[in-house]
Length: 475
Image (cartoon, rainbow, N blue to C red):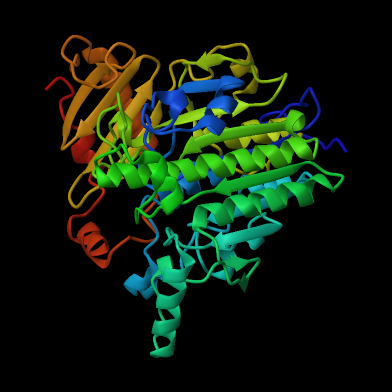
């Protein structure tokens, strides 16, 4: 069935509406998959998809932390614009004021848009958009949810279940998110498999069930690997016995498990006859966490940073006979672009009052041209008394770190080593002005990850943008 589309955000897709499968990892480093240069981690399933699809070399997410990044992806807006620049706190922290917050109900998610367009929708894995009913995935456009609502989880059920039951028996009523039972559509389940394998299994189940329906489907396979805690199966660790660093070895084994699961999902798509009608998108929610086994080479820094390593991520598209095979797309793109692009491919209507920061990149992608010529992509992280910002625009990258602005030609200087702000002051000032204008759309945070962060925000009259944008860009 072909549905009406809004001319501003969608177009009648040709060929017909695809299934859409988004596979997202948690804290995956830029160089931790074979198709992006990994030498010590084996990812044959992902590499095969990337080789038969198009690799995006300049793909960015909306924030260098996972919660805001995932909210931005699903809402098609920068999280700063709807009060979500911080991770939601772990329920175990006991910050009741914030534990019951979530992505505002006024934000129509891409899942709802696709569901309303007739797609069968499912999310398997990490949610991290809120735990109370108004924010539950089954109330935000997903027909099927299997996983956990918080920001992370332990991987071995024999450990987290025992801890949960012990604390529950002792009379505890508030539990750390990482030990809570998994759920399926609101009902607790007794999971017995290693977390990554369980989520892959449920992804396979969803594909098989969805393929029997008369509608296309949208699967958001939301892994928490290789996010800490670093926990891997012995049989996966055995593949990496030659890696001496213990953290790197465990991390590699966790990525290995993701790759195995992706292979299982692709096999299910193939067996059900759906692979040729499916757009697969793979990415990480932010950069790899430094000191936790990841490798962001050749990028600078990692998770939490506004340098490239914080929010530039590995990504590819795969869709047989539609997405160009064996290609690389070097133009900057953002996870913000998923929303309007998916809506366009689905022939879906986006609500008239829905604000979007992304662009429908599909036609430009196929033509190998930029959809963002002269238009910036932002990342911004708040600290106690100041904010750091990163801006990617064409070949330029500007950063404000510790209240000092710098400029790089990122095409020639991917590691951000050579500050050229003095030789291109007009470029830097243009980018600073764009960031300042963007900041006018920000709202006050609805929550903070810790009570201390909330107190500091008030005490220091944050966000203090006036100070940041009044700094001399040539210093």
